[in-house]
Image (cartoon, rainbow, N blue to C red):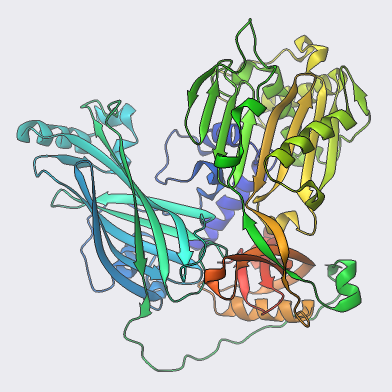
Length: 595
């Protein structure tokens, strides 16, 4: 088994085992730690994208020597040789731009663009030569800091020189193409390793087919952080320094050979009855419109006063906010509101009291029903519960969406579930038995929950909203709204809406056919980094996805795309599906599992 196949196997196994909790970022963090069996990882990710953790860098801590193709050599040495050779064929930009943040100078040395991904390496150096930078592997293991030989050597070095212990992080957070809309990549991995001269080399990979795609120039918004540490490996409160810096570059192919490479043979499979799903408008006209995509920003649109209005306990003021910044609000009763431009998460009692909160426990049970053993077992039965009806719950959810600037006429409530006391206790018994039988992993200090103690006031409705005309598999978690609503109001919300659909830009004369999309996918796979071949096509659906406009300076548009669910050899053996998104207007590949 190759390294890539092993990575795919592990990624798929984790995705399957966590499929019922993926939509809750807090719960996902807890379960991931149990699945991995450790408390730290060698990768950093955006909180809203926690499941990209297995797609980032997996790099060992050895020194790195600069060369004419720094990125290709680095990733070839620390990831795998095949990737390094592939990156030599990419578009390369040697940067050399620096910024000073706190006591550290960050320099972005080189960028490579290849197959809808940007790879980069840079150097972080202390401003003062007596300061010592602690690499990520050591800095993120404070419990081992006092016994790790390398860590102690760094501590002694700082003591001897009278310098400070520092640790750093640096990563891209938004990507622009040809001066177009700056977008957050769907997957970001970053890592650093120490060098012999006291500096560290930081590296990153930013990939997906939406934020990172073919262009002439790239604009990269970097975020870098510096913390001071004590000799026990703890970050010192109040020492965090953060800075944003933007780098523009025009990557080019270095040393083009001019020689034509032989095209690998393409296997075009016979289409023998895959499922085809298309809108009625396409059946009638053979085309669909292209719409303007209007970017959302929940950090500006959301008002904390819309949440937690009646959720206080023990006489606490529900709107008494203990902590607040532009992206994070912690209420006095431990309810948490987390915001990003394209996503909003709200959970009452989601902080340290989460495990004891009735609403939090109920939300866990809702995810549990999506577990493979119980998929489809629980369905809507009652439209009226204690103190709330299904219609009232939907009205509250849709009113919040409208206030946030989400057009409800572009969404449909495609799933509703009544959580009566009887159902809560039934689900709870299944959950506890799965834990007892070892089918679900939990923290060592987990205590069984008394579901019979939940009061009738916690009965409520789970609601799931999907965007009209967008396949959820294609959306990749970027669109959709989930709520749990009870007598107190909305006690849980998970909303993702990167763009709203605006006016029609134009209507193509015709779209490529589904068979043509499948054929193009086979060709793309034959040219990919990994040797993949389609074994079967399961489903092809015509849906919408936001991509950059042809003139990238005009922003984003919603275009019709063919979503293809297929199996390659590995997927067929393990019985899971891969996906690909093909632009139905121009036939270009937007994103795919094999990349």
